[in-house]
Image (cartoon, rainbow, N blue to C red; front, side, top):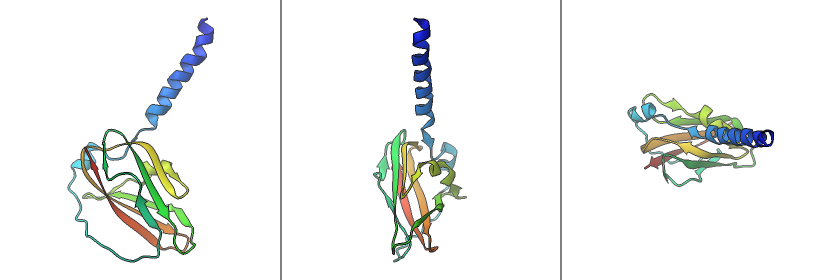
Length: 143
């Protein structure tokens, strides 16, 4: 009986480890305590890709799904290697390595993300195959 249960126990342990490791700590407490960078409000017409937040701007900081969509314009393909995600603090924090695992085609989809409580300004930018850049300022508020 013991030998029949062993595979089930191993599978449960591995599944639990995979689930736990899927959590992405997007912003640390130390990074959140740094002073905010002055964020100029800009609006401009661009031919670069669009960047759209698909997640509500107000989230539960302990665990939420982070979803972003990129919209190609003018028939040019998105260049995924050009993705840059910055936490707008002094100094800025490059979050790109933390979100790159969720990049799938024209979206970033991270099902389990955590951030400290508070207001978190992010800049997400990406280029298309013609070198045109699109970016968006995203203001996440975590409770």
